[in-house]
Image (cartoon, rainbow, N blue to C red; front, side, top):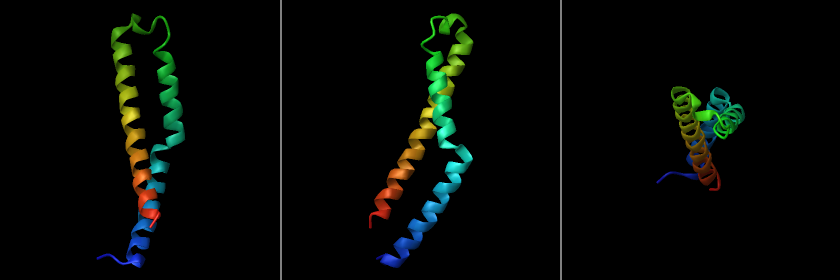
Length: 83
């Protein structure tokens, strides 16, 4: 069984890794980019260029996946950190 001290070390290491991930993806910038792209999709002429629209939708989906994965990591960290 893992000791409390070992769990604290794991938690500290996990937090440091989360910081690195946050710096590499810049979550605030990523969320802003997602919002900007989503705003494009409500423009009346969005689908006038089907290829461009599909590329934007694909990028939106990738950003959403990235943000969701990051948020899941944060949730895991917070769960570990509670102990």
